[in-house]
Image (cartoon, rainbow, N blue to C red; front, side, top):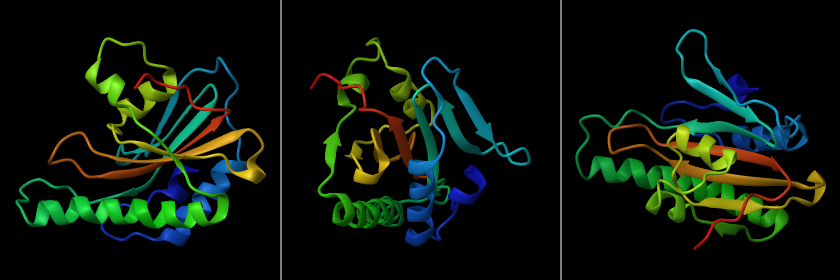
Length: 173
């Protein structure tokens, strides 16, 4: 699944990302209690997917490496990632109604706090951004979340999709 969803580099294809989201919503999700499995490209070692009890997380787009970029180029790359997220979110809002924003700020401010496995998986991939969450009609009890993040100023931005079986665990404000 990962090999068909990831779009690395500057090229962003919203249609391809939406196809990947549709496949995720109808694809298998490991049952509760399943171990966390992280799929990587055997040649490059790049992350392709994380699968665990109750969720699947995959990258949809990865931007270029930001090493050595200074403003305004660095800011332009961050804005590009924001535009990609906004493009997908706008399309999905049109299909399923407005998304709900779920912030992970509590977990960032409180690193010793209990982290449900789904949030641990997000952070393991340096996806510290707010989650844009939908409950698609055609996907039974599944939830879809989009998240954009990167670990520090030099690492590539990653736009990822998370599909859960049931609601995402709520976090304190």
